[in-house]
Image 1 (cartoon, rainbow, N blue to C red):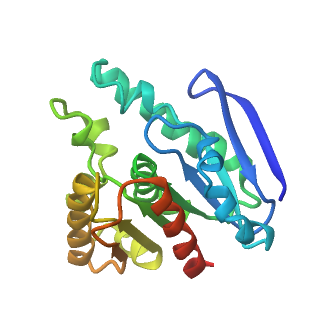
Image 2: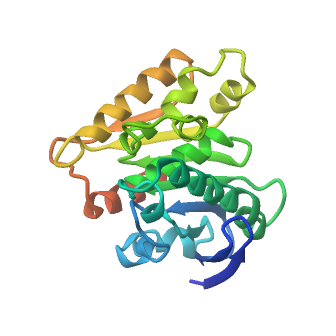
Image 3: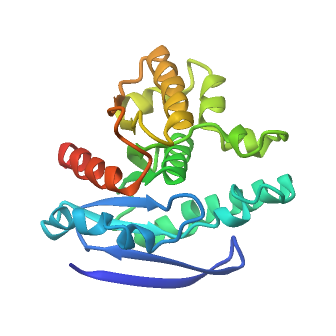
Amino acid sequence: MKEEYVKKYSPALDRDMEYKTYGDQGHPVLVFPSQSGRFYDYQDFGMVDVLSSFINEGKIRLVCVDGIDGETWSDANGDEQKRIELHERWFHYIVDELLPSVRHSEQETFIATGCSMGGYHAANFFFRRPDLFDTLLSLSGLYYAGFFFPHYTSSLVYDNSPYDFLSNMPAAHPYWELFRQRRIILCVGQGAWEDNLLESTRRMDALLKEHHVPAWIDYWGHDVSHDWPWWRKQIVYFMGKLC
């Protein structure tokens, strides 16, 4: 398996940013880290290993991006406007700087995936930019920004809250038809530490149904907890269906 580590200056964030790729051919998969995680977590927690057959067979290649949640979503005591402004700069770093540098062609579209907070990020990027992503695979994601900004609202918080901006998106908006052409998978367990994620997934389930967007919303059992052993099982199961 070909691996490549990249460290490159980001004008959007005015700092060096890191990411790592696995494989050099196949459908590109953009992997977002879980809350306050790093680009190397996907490998450290065994996710790359369980996907190795897909990578080695040239079905997918992974692009594991770095996150800055510790300065944005996780910084509960920080200034709310500065937090969300920094997150928006990170969003543009991913969209305007990183994706063009890892695309094999201008027509290439990505699978967006992640676990927990990574699932939120995957959904946020997918629903904001469905022109760049053909597939969403979110595991144990949360889909509204208010969970992290309970006492603060702004246009940027709204723009990064998929449930909210989709709820108010006009039925005639062209994105709805684009969503209907994409592949959407939201998976959540019903066991330990999944309560908030389960509720959020159910709300997204109802919203997508209301707009006739075909999506695979998969509720796993009451023994399925919010943890890496289950996410390893889930990623292999769903990637087998997607590839």
